[in-house]
Length: 550
Image (tube, rainbow, N blue to C red):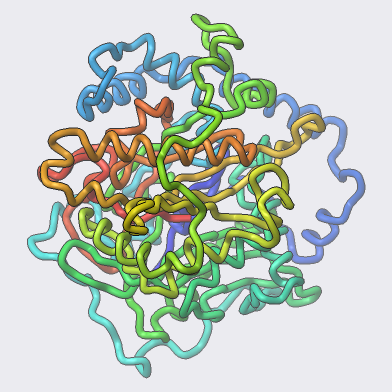
């Protein structure tokens, strides 16, 4: 299995390995010693002329993001078509004016969320991805497969390459131990400073030690799948890619896969073409464990997405978001009205809602398993995985010790709804935290972003619940309470994708449509397209995808 890069970028930043490793980078190809010197220089090695030029680039980029340059008409038409196609309340009133206004308001959001660059388009034609042409992935023009299945058959362990792939001179492989605080911080530092595609980024993601522990250490994880590259002379970590195991149901097939993520190469080494070597090496490590399929996501298009989802954003802390230019006040609205429109209730409304506890694991696991079968692609979690995904990231101490609504080191929030009479868990929701540093902003140095994770409701199993709107109403109530919990924990924005049962409820919960796109990919597996932001094969939008990628 190989990887690719999921964008969590501004400009063309990479998040999950669906990167185009053959991309021509516009960065210097410094040696390890040059990187070390540049990283430790104080305050800067840039000349005044270079700084002025960089400031000019930043001003132009931010000017474009703030609406000083028009959003392409092609994009407006595309979004308008999709809004009409997906339907929902309010879609009849959609027109080019309000779609353009929404896109302009959300353009900076999507850059912060890492799903689109200033142009909002993929600059690389899919046919030019030479690396992916050599990999067992569906190629352009193949069309839907007649049957689902692998592209290349699995191999016995002895037929898998036994030696690591060669690296350029001056570099060496390294297996990262996320339990080691020093190595954990090395990964954090690399991602925080280099997990972007351009040097003019205004926001950088903060992958805390707690987040990396949660994301990279699910039950059954393999340390060998946390692959790094170091400079031989000083052992500095300059590249990283990760894989974690997952049991994935794709339509009628249950397959063990590796979830590939966090492909990152130091800015000054982009021309060394380390990305394809990293992808091949993590593939080798995964194959050695008997796994030959993978799932990954990307903002960029590479061969060949199995589904495409769109990002939506719910504003919580409007004054702060406007101040840091995450969004702006539309022409037909005042700041005061914008605050009123996005005001979140002061208390949750669902009877029996409380934090998930250890005793809830069996019931949540049962509800999750039954609910997820409604989608075409979803993960299989046993009790240990349910405990890890929904409880292990809750932090330490009491709520409030880490700030309002938070424990110390809290990464995930999971709440259940318990029937007061039967004590049965009827619903649950979860979301996770991934903040960003706001570069050069002393007033608001951190953007607090929450992401909708997994949820489930017994209402889905009531006869005619979808047709009657009963499921939609219930999910609006439950996810609406998630917004209240996130607001109490002082999050600034709440993000969601057009997957699972999100599509029918986002508009009524006042999520704004984004122009950020996330492509889902399967490595060494063929299946017909899955319903994401649009319907596929008669399946409603969102219902093809039941996997939330970190």
